[in-house]
Length: 219
Image 1: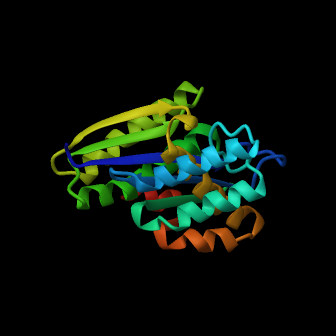
Image 2 (image 1 turned 30 degrees about the vertical axis):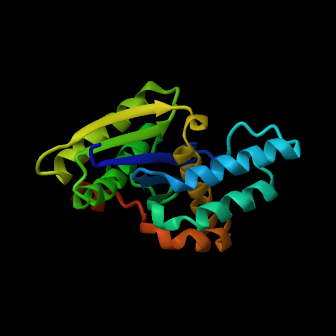
């Protein structure tokens, strides 16, 4: 089996720049290599939920009740050594034009996040990279992911490895569900000033930065 790095992507907040929109927009990546020991614990807990009477098809932080959320964060916290997390945060009120709107901001942030992520993958000497994002209905968002991955790979690797970009439903991978949970924790820290859960997962975070357009473009 080749040395393969899996990178799961998730986002929190929205790209609505009206007064109704969130103040922050967050992109988070979770990198893993096989085997995935955390998956066994998450799978066992999902069946615990079913036997308790919950109709748990998959874990989704914003929808799960606080008891489920606490247990899932506990499982993640017990397995932080298996994951490598990068997160990028944009304060939309400070976003510079012309990337201050919608998919333009998303593309710019994603390029910077993947630059950080794939630099780490290069250091691990991976010869295959699989990027999995939650299924996104907006075609331009999918194209932005694929374009950003190609660009970041070219800069990170002297010899570009095999790579694939996949768009799967989050219920298909515990990796996407973990990314959802961690991205939620980062978002709550910035949007609501709630950092207790973030502090639990902090040891797995390799980079946490505010998105600055000029700094991203200079690299």
